[in-house]
Image 1 (cartoon, rainbow, N blue to C red):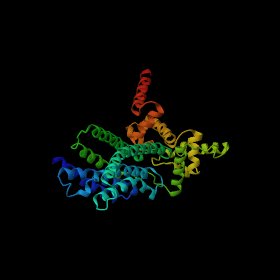
Image 2 (image 1 turned 135 degrees about the vertical axis):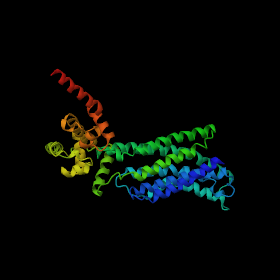
Image 3 (image 1 turned 90 degrees about the vertical axis):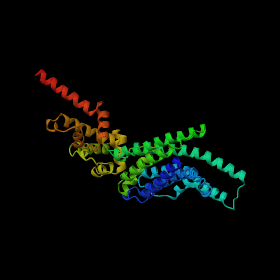
Image 4 (image 1 turned 90 degrees about the horizontal axis):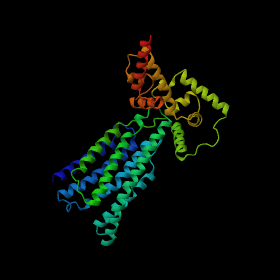
Length: 378
């Protein structure tokens, strides 16, 4: 009975979270949060049926006897489609997305038919169909998990082509969620094979994980806050990288490339555009001025660095100069990072170690040690 109460509470919470996600007060990532809402509905269905069975009410609610299977069939497609919306520039809702819900729709039709007087399947045929669907659920969960995780990894690679501070839009929270779901899938398979009961654990894990999803999905800033023409260019860059269809010939002549590199170096060394923590590829392209595609080609194919590497290399050099300057000795490392153009301590530490081979604190310690040696020698 206690487990049934826990499942019922979890189910109610999931349905409430679905309402919050759908009517997102921030009105950011609206379509993505609609799919997150469906994810919560699916989780609510998965926990509702065990609660009904625990209370012995399955005979009164016969139409809900397979609602947990419906939840399993809809959960991972909904999460995958949410991730697609989060990670696709200029992503618009497409009717093709409904094709991902075809299995759950077919299952619902067969289940309703089985409960009605107009069942078009014999008992034996219905049993075979339900066995096939149960097997399909396990395969579907695994396939969509792989697709979703791959999508996140590709997204984290792509955003380095257009921004230098990736932490706010890296969607690491979704990556960690997928890892947790992967562990739960493993638990699901193991308990199914060895017939192990973990009923008291599963709803708690579902609820804790879903509360985390709700918080981060609502707090997530817009991934691609750019103009339509910029979004189109960014999409083309991503497709080119993903399909590895780099342009075989130069986008511009060698002389023009040299001029563009000189112009870019001027903007970095003289105007120090890298000090702007919000600087991104479209903004830098406007200052050049060249198209977003041309600047991407200049950075990736001619200079050999993506936007993240290029901008943060200048910021690291700026941070090193600030560390060596007596004028900024009163600042801690976070203050140094902000003054150098970084907007995240994590990005600062990662970029600094990549460029120098040591952490900022170790670099500063080495510099202080060198100064003391010089002072002692004098």
